[in-house]
Image (cartoon, rainbow, N blue to C red; front, side):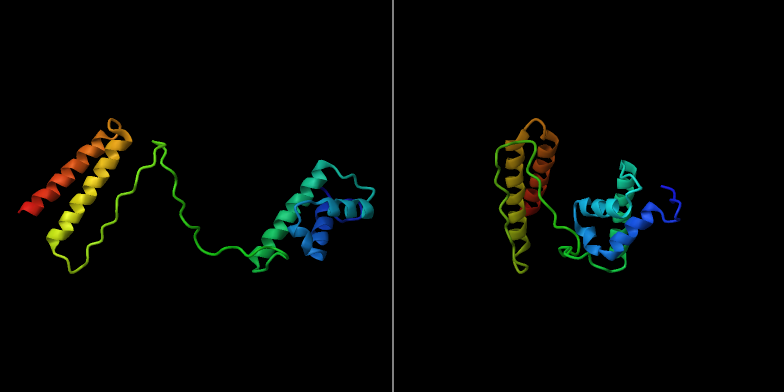
Length: 157
């Protein structure tokens, strides 16, 4: 949007509005700003292009305020850090399958007890895989059976 004859651009007008009234930056609507613009500048028509200039300047001013460490007035505090992971529901089946029980083996337990617990956990996961989709997960089931058999061989030796 080019400057008008008096040398003041439309973007300068909106920038001044936002700097004079930073609470406008938190409002979802720009109606108050448009009303003020119409009152102060009746010679300039409020077209879609002018409204776009207003929206762009509002976005730029918000970004500048945040980048300079400023906080928008009446803005809720932003959470810090990485968002918590959300777990998605299983997409392959609508049936609820129980999770494999967590078996904790104390550090002082014998290796044989740890291997027995591991074998039981693999067996539980194997049963869950069979119940979910026996044909679709046949590779997984084959690998789980092999892992369980190898753990069983370790127990016997």
